[in-house]
Image: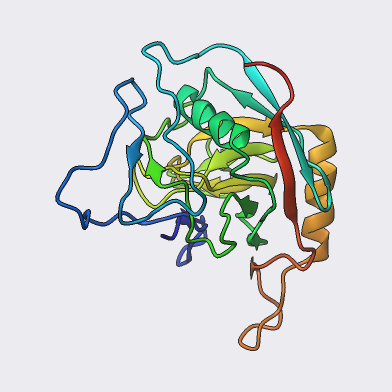
Length: 241
């Protein structure tokens, strides 16, 4: 299940892996939580690691921030999750972290296009195809400024330091996410749910400077596996939500 993230390049469509949704192979409808977030099982795309559906309280917390202590093999990547911007997304991310879903997973994709500079993580399979076995609705940003590189105004500025969800189309969020190490121009189709701390930006710069693994087809790629293997060693809330 491949999460897709579009660049602002005129003819380039870039997959930021995370998933496509197909009709269920089972007769019974997938299980859905009854709260406002409506986390829904994806039987055709089982969890890469077994994890229950997230809590979905009637009043999903929608105020304040949650600090996340993220240790990677390349350095710290502290995150601040913003419940006001994306309460259901934060609820899911914290749930996955508490169940150690992200621990010992590899950030499988780095991009270095002029208008797309991100590191993508969150798939235990390391292929861009894995997820948590459920999906949930978008909480799309409404306050991003227009991207200066796009005269049409269709794309927005996903600025350096933003944390956002990868997806496979509307309402297909799962576990894969991306962090922006350089200003990027994207359609506002990706839920923004937090930011990267200063120490994390240094780590991202180090990973980006390491470059992308060349292939036999492309000796100087701008999209692919980071040369510096980046493993999420542990992802934990650093303060109570």
